[in-house]
Image 1 (cartoon, rainbow, N blue to C red):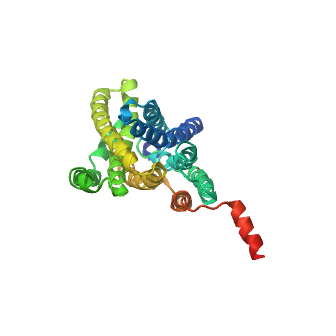
Image 2 (image 1 turned 135 degrees about the vertical axis):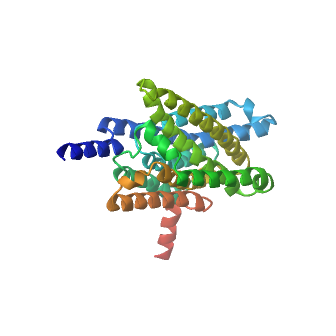
Image 3 (image 1 turned 45 degrees about the vertical axis):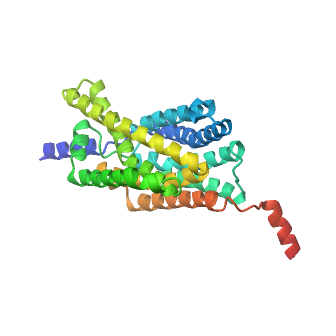
Length: 325
């Protein structure tokens, strides 16, 4: 009976392995740096598009646009490394740090407005990200390639992917050609829905790669799974890349980045909750903490974007108060 209990405990430990403190610290550091790099990509690409339009040439010939594209690739590689070290429900919301960084950068490079409320929004976004880090899950619910295969074939997750795929086909072939250039939510919806494929694929590749590198008996199956996930990831990134640039041609980079963050994060967390079930390791206090952190981040992003056209600062507010007195 004691042996059976020990075996059950070992199985439970394997199913919810806690990453080492060093791995968590490294993963958090990489996630933060990647968020800042990703925050600069939309601004640099938008700057390149604007420069190309002024010259009457394609943005593919502009060095600033290519700098943004390279930054996007570096940021995605960083995200890949972070997903292999810490839970998805932590890495994805940390992308909020890129929004205020991108807004500050856009105020200099693109001359987009950032008033006192925008700066307060930057502060709230950073504070909310810290709360997310404090209350994030401390263990991973999927740690082996066998568990990953079981999760990927779960009827609930397969059904969810089918719904996402149908929505993508509808948006790309029917809605986007007619309403994409005038409605920012069309391009954002396409890019965010693709996150249901890119983020789980990235996490899955990291898990499958562990079996391949260790030459386990199941390494052949892991290689096949890794190739399939790489193909899915590659196709998703190419389509995302295309529609991100379409959106930047038509809309403000800061507005796109902020709305994209909220919608993308929500859909990725939903996909991760269905596939990896990392939320099962989160207690009530940590769940409420993460909800408050995400809400704080969202409020900060709203302050950055909704009030960006209001032309006022602390000096004008002080003058107004002096006149009132």
